[in-house]
Amino acid sequence: MKKVLILHISQFGGHKKASENIKEALIFKEPNLEVINLNGFAYLSPHIEKFISFIYTLTIKYFPLLWGKIYDKKKLIKTITPLSKLINLIAVPKFLSLIRKIDPGVIVATQAFPCGIIAELKKNQRIDVPLIGVVTDYYPHRLWIHQGVDLYVVACQEAKEIFIAEGVNPKKVRVLGIPISVNFLRVYDKKELAKEFSFALNTNTILLMGGGLGIGPIKRIAKTLDEVEEELQLIVICGKNKKLFSWFKKRAKYFKKRLFYFGYIDFVNKLMDFSDIIITKAGGLTISEALAKGMATIVVNPIPGQEERNVRYLEKKETILRVNSVKEIGNLINALLKNKNVLFSLKKNALQNAIVDSSLRIVNLILNYLN
Image (cartoon, rainbow, N blue to C red; front, side, top):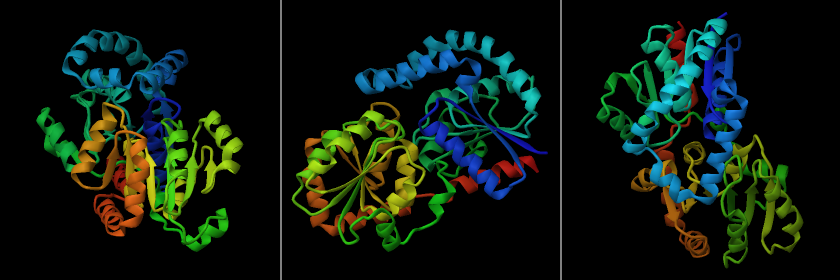
């Protein structure tokens, strides 16, 4: 039986979700294919994985400016090169054993760390398995660049040009989009969704979310939206943030606007189909999902680093709006709901810059290598 190995890092977040979406699309196209989806950090060491996830979440939440200063800096990459070599000494033998055991026909990596480990094995001629790196942001960072990668998948032409500028052969970079679930190919009827979730059918609907971890000033944004003059209903996705979910559960009855709140769900596509505007963090995967559904997107105070770069690119394409503080949101929402032309323009530009079937395109590429 032919096998595909997909490597990501962390328990939550865009890298893992992207890997799940690729696996879902592979099985959709080839039901008999064996697909192994593995957390690279956890495989190397569960303790290291937990520590790195803790440090990353802590930095993003409380010290975002620090993250922005160190993200993708040439000096930092030079500094951590000796550390990377040390990690490779530990990781390479373990991953070599894994690959020999699984014997995959293709290896796919949705994050730079496992991609680098496999690329190192290929460079040293320890394995000869096609390696595809799938970048899950609109602006790739330098840690992706490895001699042993056979093909890169990127979100846009600008990302391809960044790889080329770093010396990657243009033939090794394909613009296929960030892999979103094949479920996003289906469009749900708003009347059916209103009935299913008890939404008001003819009311402006705002979707508020902070990624899988429910990060960001979601409580303050919800309070601000509750004071907006224009009529609206609010849908909040709390993700894995149980404290946030509990907060809304206790206070929902005090909201003046109609409020609906959910935990970690697998039907975001349905809620996006029903909503007019999404307010979210600027992760590449979430933004790609919103574009695929033709949503007007607002991002609040993006994290310096990958989110900041995502926003910069998408602002040029006029597909999203950015606010730098929660205070600005109320006036912006009022303006959008009053001026439907701006709202329509944002939705139109979103669809024009979306790649709805991104996962299937990536899967076709993988299957070509397998065959």
